[in-house]
Amino acid sequence: MQVPAARVVFSEADRAEIAAAAREILASGQLTLGAYTREFEDAFARAHGAPFAVAVNSGTAALEISLRAAGIAGADVVLPTNTFAATAFAVLRAGGRPVFADVNPRTLALSAATVAAALTDETRAVVIVHIGGLIADDIAEVQALCAERGLVLVEDAAHAHGSTRAGRHAGSFGVAGAFSLYPTKVVTSGEGGMIVTADERVRDEAVLYRDQGKAGFLGNVHIRDGYAWRMSELHAATGLVHLRRLPEFLASRAQVAARYDAAIDDMDGLERIQVPPGDVNNYYKYVVLPRPGVDRFSLRKELKERHGVGLAGEVYEAPLHQQPVFEEHASRSLPVAEDLCARHICLPVHSDMTADEADHVLGALSASLRTLTLAG
Image (cartoon, rainbow, N blue to C red; front, side, top):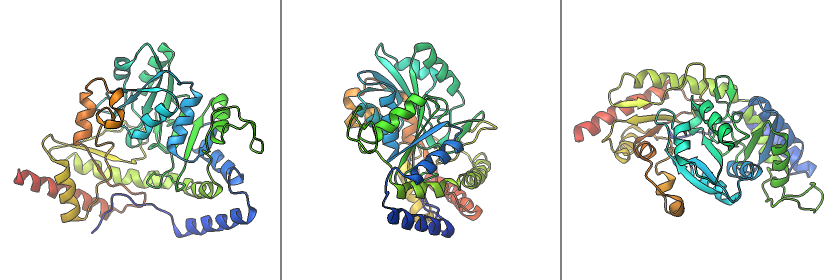
C-alpha cells in the first residue's frame, strides 16, 4: 500500500460545480472582486464565527495586511521561531522587526512566559501561530499579557481552518486571523488567503490594502501603500465549494487522529501532542516526537522506501533564528524550539483517509522504529 504525505480532495460533484462556475465567470468578464469573492468571504466568516472576512491571494498576504493594519511599522514583533518563514517575512514587509521567541513544548506555540522573555521596549505586537491546527490551551494567558502590555495580538491561523479552543474559533483571539488556502491546507482555493476579524477598521484597511491601496475599486486615488493582493473569482469559486466540505473533513481527520492516538499511546519511545477535551483540532498536521536519538532522515527513508509511507512536511525542520536569511534578527538560543524542530515528525492525515491507510501508517511506523533501533 502507498500512503502519500498529502492528498488534495475534490469529489467529482465538486469538480463539476467548480467547472460550471468557471464557465459562468469567464462568460461574465468579471474575473476579480465579484460575487463569488463576496460569497466566499461571507461563508468563511460564518464558518469561523467572525463578523468579517476579506479574501486575498495568499496566506502570506493575509498576515502582512493584518500586521499593516495593526500598525507595526518601525516596531518589534514577537513570533515563534518554529514557524514557516512567511510569518517573519510578513513582519519584515509590513515594516516591523521580528523578535524570535521560544515555545511551550506541550503546545508547540508561544506561551505568556516565552512572550514575556522576548519583549523589548519597542515591542508593538505578538504573532501567535496555531501549529498543525492546534490552538494552545493557554492562549488566554497570552491574550491577557498582550492586554496588560498594550500589545496587538495577531493570529497566524494558516493551518487552523475549523479549529476551536473552548468553543472559540481560530482567528477570534486576536485583532485578526490570517488563513492560508494553499493546496495542501484543509480548505483550499488553489492559491489564496483569508483575513477574519471582528474589528470593522481592520476589515476596511484590509479591503484598501489588497487592491493597491485604492480608495475605490474603479478609481485611481491611492490612500494606502497597497499591493495586488486580490483573490480572483476563479479561486473564490473553488474555495467556496471546498469550504462546504469542512465539517466532513474535520470529522474524517478526527477519526484518523483517534486511531493514531490509541496506537501511539501503546508504542514505546513516542510522544504525541495532546488536544484538550472538547477542543477541535483540524489535524492539518499530526505531530509525533520520537525519543531522542532517532534519526529523522533515516526514519523518513525507511518509511518511504520499505513501506510506501510519505511523512508530511515538518512544522518546521529548522527554526527561523538559525536560518541565514534571518541572521541579523537572531540574538539567543531557543532550546525548546530547537529540540522540537530537530526531532518531530508529522504522520500523514488526509481528508478522505481510510482506516486501512491509517493502520498501514501505524504498522509501518512501528516496524521502522524497530528496524532503526536494531540497526543502532
